[in-house]
Image 1 (cartoon, rainbow, N blue to C red):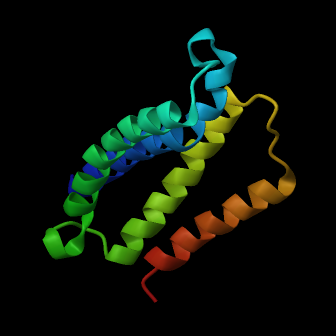
Image 2 (tube, rainbow, N blue to C red):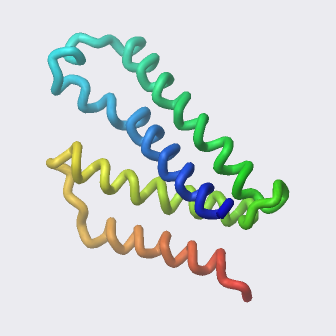
Length: 123
């Protein structure tokens, strides 16, 4: 159960992170965001990043083998990176309709999935 909670928290965390890092690039498309200065955008992104940490820290504590969880530190990081790319791809497709994924993007993502397999495989 800790492993599942870890993954759910990482998905939520990475969703906030993606909006904090890239969501502001769409603010100019809305009336309320057209005249925002960089400082305002930074504070909005920090506010979103706060919620990233609200889920990221518990995810790592729940999931880390040293705290009774099922994953090693390397496994946690690998899971997090795979989730980050998945969330980013979904975010890009939904909010940045002009962004297109090419074959090399999909191959690169496939290699990351392969990395997850390699890291979790008991050799």
